[in-house]
Length: 229
Image 1 (cartoon, one colour):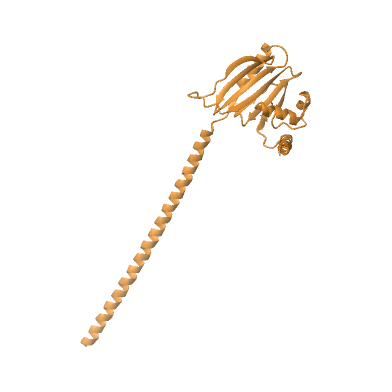
Image 2 (tube, rainbow, N blue to C red; image 1 turned 120 degrees about the horizontal axis):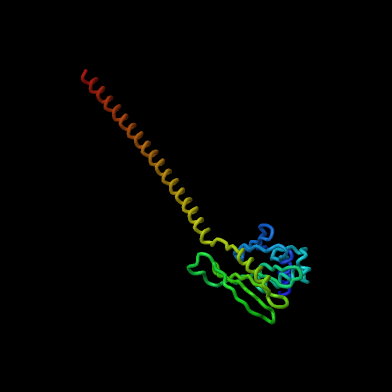
């Protein structure tokens, strides 16, 4: 069963099933699950979860689409960008279940610097719509330079957060309310039509009854006149 799962996962990754990244233009990427749009500077190779298997970036990383995708998924990354020589890399990561942004109308990035297993890192992170979004720089050898810092900041500054789903909910409520009002109006109109039709039939019946009563009185009058003669 485990082998079957691995095979299915590998096939899904290879053929790009369930792609979540939509390129909107040169260097601009919309990461749907992360809920952001980010711009990557020129001169960078970029790998996303829907990058095709024949992209040369996989060869530059020394792997295949399947192996690179496994690494991205394991680290919660949705995009990996690197310059020529791969001296450093920048990842866009997302972790769900981080609460909310409180009273902030727009998420604000905070900066953290550190070192993990001898690798210098700098991370811009922000909480938005119940998830933490991070723009992470990792130096693949040596300290983080000013050029790296400036590039990372430029990418973080380019981030645009998606509109909260709450706005879509309001739209759906408005549309639903309009449909309900239209239905109510139709029912009322139908009821009025039926009411008018019913009143017309009643008036017609009353007219027929009065006509019959008048004929009966005229016949009775004629009968009395005949007997009188």
